[in-house]
Every structure is written in structure tokens, then in C-alpha cells.
Image (cartoon, rainbow, N blue to C red):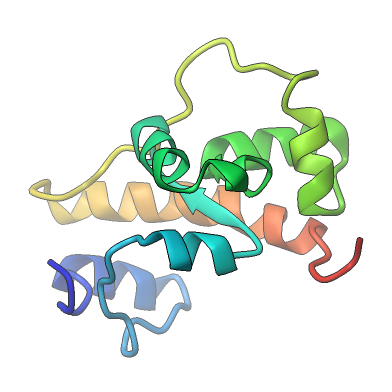
Length: 132
């Protein structure tokens, strides 16, 4: 799907949640892209593992969204470095995946969109980027 715009149902849900899907374009994760990122959030542990297989040095900057949100809350993390430091202290008891709504009804897209917003909003509000 590289180069394609956002899926139409996802675009409607994102717009309904206040986001702007107009500039979205699917890209393939590359080592260079991972190396330049301040924070890499994936929806599944499998996706996280694939990122780390191509860019293992990014371990301290790569999390599932649910993992980062959980660590941010438990450790009162203010930086990405705080998230990484909290990881060994607060291990997950179960997988921390966000379900992929592709192929599902629009209400499922909406539920997943709300879940992502509930996880992402507080996380990004708490983190300070560019401070070490």
C-alpha cells in the first residue's frame, strides 16, 4: 500500500476525532526512517519487533502505543528516555496490541480510533521532546 492515501473509513473516523487525513501517504518503514525518529510507536508487538530487527539501536525509542501509554502513566514519564528506563521495571503481563480494523465495519474503526486517541493523547501531552 506504499504511496496510497489513508483508507476512506479510517479517514472519516480520523476527521471525526479532529485529525486531518489529507496529507497522509503510506510509507514503508526503512532503517533510515527508524534511525531519524525521536519516537516510534507501533500498533502491535509484531510490528515493533520488525522495526527492531531492521534498527536494533532504536530499542529505547520503539514501543507499541499501548506499551508507551502504560509506561508513561506508571512511571510518570516526561521523556522518551523515561519510557525506556521504565520498560524493565514495568513489564506487561499480556500482549499490548491495538487491533487492526481493516475489513471490519465502520463502528469498529470508530472504536479503534477512540482507543488510539485515548492512548495517544495523554502520552503526547506528558512527553517533552528534544530535552535530554
